[in-house]
Each structure stands twice: as structure tokens, then as C-alpha cells.
Length: 536
Image 1 (tube, one colour):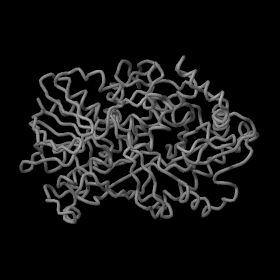
Image 2 (cartoon, rainbow, N blue to C red; image 1 turned 90 degrees about the horizontal axis):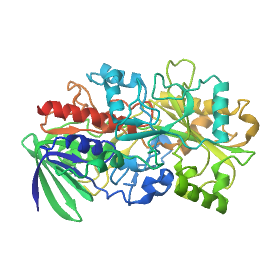
Image 3 (cartoon, rainbow, N blue to C red; image 1 turned 90 degrees about the vertical axis):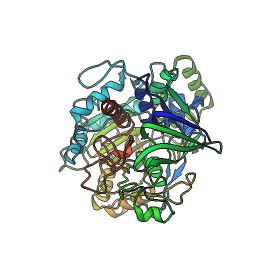
């Protein structure tokens, strides 16, 4: 056993945790400890943009979670990748920089969370950002997070954009600007050198020299320790050796939408009846811990094409495949700089809506699973997901052992709205595919396939084939104390306890309309400022 005393302890060195450690250690008089369950980000595939094909589903960098069998997916269990390495999921995500819609944050305020309107969070998005296009009303320059334009534009992507415009979707070159709606290319969290800019790269590594910052990797957190109702320290182990760290200021949980509620429950903060099942002493009855789980469910549609315009063709050619590596090594350009998707569409699934409720991710390739390699035929993938699902699930402990993964119940497609949106989404894809710019190129609809035509058949396809797009949120919900299902207040302090905050995507009362990495960074930027204000 060893004991050190810190002003701040941050649990989890992921998208939010690295930001917290960097910002809180700016004060040289504050001693900060950052604990990460994974290892250092030394794997070179982490830093090559397309390396997520290698790092996802690898136990060296990924928690490799799996959901419970989900009734809404006809009893299927899904793999849920989550980063287990410095940088967390920002070290193995698809590098897409998307903030969501202004209405998302304004609605957080309407739900009782003062200070979280779009106008109030925009400065924190800008603070973190170093945008290749420079600073303006909506973007920042000079921040720790590199945001760059896409480096690869392919003919199939241009044709898809043209087809979207033909069916009435406007061109949009900045989904994080005045309006999200439209079709265009993503911006990416890639440096000007063509490498991934995780939060470990952008926020943590530049400050590792600070004498007041201690980073411990391979640290499995067992529980938060309490002195009455005050969080007083952390018990964790490294290589089987148990340690304790004392905290005289605040403990910050940034372990993500799975890890943060799990650690709270292991520490005695959760539903008292659930904790009793595992003989865990109750510190604070908080029934909302682990509830309100939300995620974006993507439906992949795959289309075979008549010309060799996709990455499938290049990856089948050993010489061209080798040249990709040479191009990246020499110039940091080419297919190895590709993100998980190139083109996005934010639009409405039906004409009754006043803002986008679905998002497309276009990939100039196709595969059953990324780890299995691309298909042997020319094809592209247009996946589509519902931005604001109304289905919610939950996370629960399987045991009191911190090494045992919790049970994840996503509860996908459990509401009529989500089911109808899934059906409408596939129909919407077919509308774009049928546009003049693209249709002559299409050889066949590989998935779902023309045999799926009725609403019942399309929904059944979604249940059998849809998968996560890796955006779990909401399990430590922010909101007024009058609702016992809310876990943290508007300053992210855990209700009924002192010296403990949750800072990651688990605090989202409702999932944002887009990818979640940029919001996770924003949440941490804002939380760090709030903690500094409260410490004065």
C-alpha cells in the first residue's frame, strides 16, 4: 500500500480526462493525479489515421465491451469498442469532428441545466480548437486540438454529394458553423503532419513536464473512498499491487459512459436495491446511475458499383496497397490519412421535421467487419443513423469485482419513433442512390437488397444488421435535483456528495445530434473552468 495526497484526482485519460488533467495542472500550486486503466499510446497504428482498423477490437487498446443480447436487435449482442489507452476513445475513433446542433444544447438548458446553451458552450469548443481554416465566429485557432480538412477526395464521394444535391439536400462545407444541415466533407482531428490528434497528443503530452502532474497507466480503479459524504481518495491497483491516493480537493470521474457509472456503483453510489445484490454498502442512493443510456445505431447500406472507383479495388492490388504505405511515409497523404468516413449528410428523414434527425457516414469501401478486410468486389457504404433516439437502456453491475465488466443493455429500437426512423432512413438512402448523378454507376444493392421492400422487411433488416456507431452517453445524467434520476447538477457535481464530479459524455441529459468526441472535449473545457471558479 502507498499513499499520496493530491488536490485533484482524474480517473480516465480519455477524451475528457486528458483535457481535465491538462487544464487543472495549469496552476502549479495544484497537485494533479491522472489514472488510466490502459497503457501508453506507443502503438504506431494509433497515430496513423486509418489505424483504427488495427486498434479497435484489440485488447491492448480497447476495452472490448460487448452488450447483452438485445431484444430490439433480435437478440444480438454487439461489440462496443471503448479506448483503453492514453487518449481513450480519441486514440481509436474515426477522427470525425462534429459538435451537434445548437438546439441540442439549448434543450439541455430547457431541461434545467443553466449555463449549457449553445451560445455558452461555443466559446469552449473554440477554446480547444486549432482549425486549419483559421478562427472566426464559430471556430478557434491556436488551441490544443488540431482540426483539419479531409486529405482524400474520391470520385465516388463527389458523385454521392452531387446526388444528394439533386434530391434537395444543400451543400454544406461546415457542419460546425451556422447550420448543420446539408451534405459535404467532414473535418477531422488530424494534425498538419497527417497524424491523429487525440486528446493525449493535443492536451496531455505537451504538459507532461509539469512537476505537479502525475500520470499512472495500467491503473485499475477499484472504488472511490469516502469520509462520510466527502470523496476523500481512490483505491486502485497496478499489476495487482493495490494503492491508495488521497484527495484534499476534488475527484473527477472521466471514465466514460460505461466506466463512470460502474465506478460510482462499485463505490456505493447508485440504486440501493441494485447495490444490495452485490453486498455493496450504500454511500448515496442515486437510482439514476447507469440509467438513461443512449447511443447512435447505424444502419449500413452497401452498393456495388460498375467501375473500380472504391478502396476495395485498391486494397486487392498488392502493388497499389504497398504504394499507399509509401505515399503516407513520404508525404503524409493518401488513403492512410482517411477517417472512418469522408462525406456526411445531416438531413430530415421525413418532411414533417424542422431540423435534421438523421446523419449519413459515406465510406468509399465496404466490409462485413473492418477487421475482416474489404469485400472482393467494388462497393461503397452509406451508413445512416438516427441522431436523437428515444430508446434508452441501462448499465448494471454483474459483481462487486472491478475487473468484471458491467452488463450493458442498450435497448435499441424499443420505441415506435425509432423503428419508423429506421425504416424511413433506408428509404432515404434509396432516394439518393436513385438520383441521376449516381444511379447509372450502381450495379446492385448488396445490403439491404431489393428483397427488402415493405416497412416490416426494412425494420427486420435493421434489427438483424444495424450496429453501434460508438456513441454511448447519458448514464450519469445532468439535471435538477428534483428528479431523482439525475446524477449530477449543472456544475457536474454528484448530488448528495462533496468533492466528486463526473466529466464525460455520461452527463448528457440527451445525446447530441452527431459524433461525440468534440462534445466530450467541450464538456471538460467547461468543467475545468467551473472547478477553478469554485476553488477560489
